[in-house]
Amino acid sequence: MDSLKGLFISAYATFIVVIAFYAAYAYLLNVSNLSWLGNVLSYGTGLIYFAGIFLIATPRTSKNMWSTWVPIILGTILTFYGTFLNKESVTYLPLILSLLMLGNWFLYTYWATDFSGRNKAVLQVGKKIPSVSFKNLDGSSVAIETFLGAPAIFLFYRGNWCPFCMAQIKELSKEYQKIKEQGAALVFVSPQSPKHTKSLAKKFDIPAQFLIDENLEAAKTLQLFHEKGTPRGFEVLGFDSDNVLPTLVVLDKEGIIRFADLTDNYRMRPEPSQYLKLLEQL
Image (cartoon, helix red, strand yellow):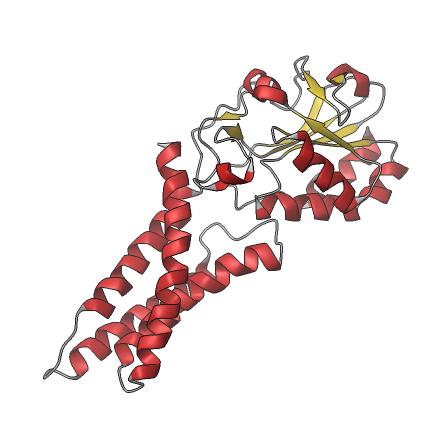
C-alpha cells in the first residue's frame, strides 16, 4: 500500500504540472472557453501548492487544507458551467480533467499523506528509549547512550528530498541557541547516505549532530521503519525506497521520553512551542 502511495504522489504531482500548463495553453487559444479557465484554476492551485512546499519551505499544513479546496472546487464549478454553456460544441475533456483533479486531490489530502496505522507502542511518553546506535559523518558508531546526562531533541527525518523535513530542520536550527542555553543536544537522524547528510550539515552549519541510521536498523527497533516510504523516482537521486516515519522525541538526561510526536500525516509537524518550553523543566 505504501508503495502505491509513493507512486501516486510522484505521478500525481507530475500530472498536475503537465495539465496546468496544457490548460493554460488551451485557454489562451480560446479565452471564451470557461471550461479550460476552470482547469487553470484547479490545476494551478495544485501547481502552486507543490511549488510552495519546496520554495516556501513550510513544516506543516492544516489537516484538511481548506485553503486549497476552495479554488479547486470553484474551478470545478466553472468547468461544469463552461462545458455546457455552449451546447453546440460541447467538449468533455476539461470536465474529465477537472473531476480527476478533484478526486485525486481528495486522495492526496486524506489517503496518500496519511499513515495513521503506524505503531506507537515503543516511543511513548514516560518510557525509556531503547538502546540503538547510529553512524556519524566519519562512519563511527554513536550509541544513543552517548547523549545521556543532558536533555536531547531527536528528529528522525526522511531525507533532503522531503520539503516538510527540510522546513522542520530549518525551524529547529533557528531555535538552536535556545536549545543550547538549556544544555540540550539537537540530533538529526536519517537513513540517507553520508553524502546527502554531509550536504545537509554544511547547509545549516550549526553544531548539531547529523547522524545516519544505516540500513534503518534503529528505525526498525523504534518502530519507525516505513517500507517503500520514499515517493517513486527519488531512487535515481540516490535515496532508498525504504524510509523512516518522521518523528520527534525529547529525552531527559536519563533517556526517558518526555515528549513524542509520532505524526499520523507527514504534512503535519509539531510547533516548537509544544516542546521547547519543556526543556526548562528537564
